[in-house]
View 1 (cartoon, rainbow, N blue to C red):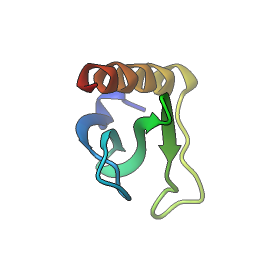
View 2 (cartoon, rainbow, N blue to C red):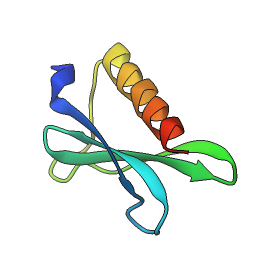
View 3 (spheres, helix red, strand yellow):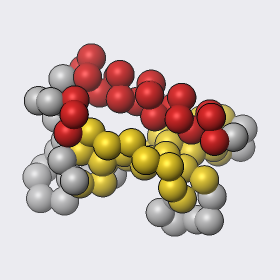
Length: 75
């Protein structure tokens, strides 16, 4: 599993007009990082065609940390 398949981008939450960092894997929407009552929060979305997402732990933790950094820079 390549970390390069992850894409982190600044955007808006899928259900609200609020800043968020969107995370895609291999072109599929995976998660979003946003502020919820002053706490950085992540929402995971289901895989569009499989039963679940599966990642190597260290790789996904690195991606989530980077997404949080990008989000905090937006604030």
